[in-house]
Length: 258
Image 1 (tube, rainbow, N blue to C red):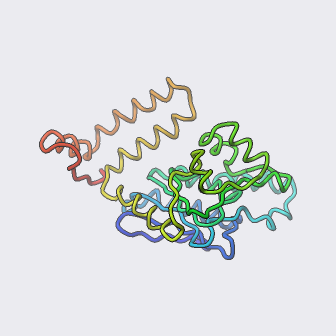
Image 2: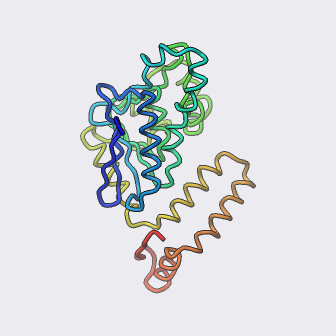
Image 3: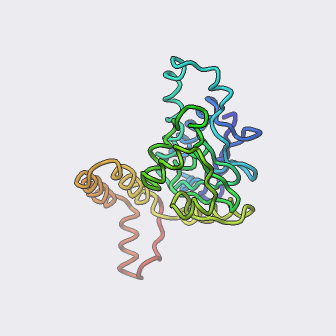
């Protein structure tokens, strides 16, 4: 991977986007993100993921210079790559926390939206300014932002292309925690670390229920939940968890991820 790195410590993987100067998301970065997501999905030593762009900027957007040369025919071929990179991050079957310093704009904002939670620096700035270039978000912005903040707020942000400060993002539910800039990575990593010894298959099942259930009607969502609920009873962690609860009370089980 050319512009993405993975560093694993005690079950937490920091997935670092590193393409100077502003982490512009090119076709190569999209390919790197898909490759990284596949690796993180398969690695048993990874229980949670922190998505980070560095201390200066999360990602200022898709590579506009690269897109400027593309025709409609070109984009028809490339558009699937644009959305599949963020979808690959969203479908990592483990908790994913975006640690956002600086700008998260356009494709960068969409990448942050693909995480399960977002921790933002006090001076972080979000936005979907694509309309100011005569285009629209193409990596999930119209869909994931709407699901987070509601239709009217999403339309306001996307129609105007305006910037959203960290305080506003917290207020409207676009981010989940705002911390000093020099603590963003540490806070996100500390949060992710609580899953290092958790019941990995139960968390995987819960994420599947929430993500897939939000895409369907209630009855179908309940059926997804029913199947996943029954499924976790085949795991060793279920035996350990329930036995521990009965014998010594809640919160004392030791899980093995099987």
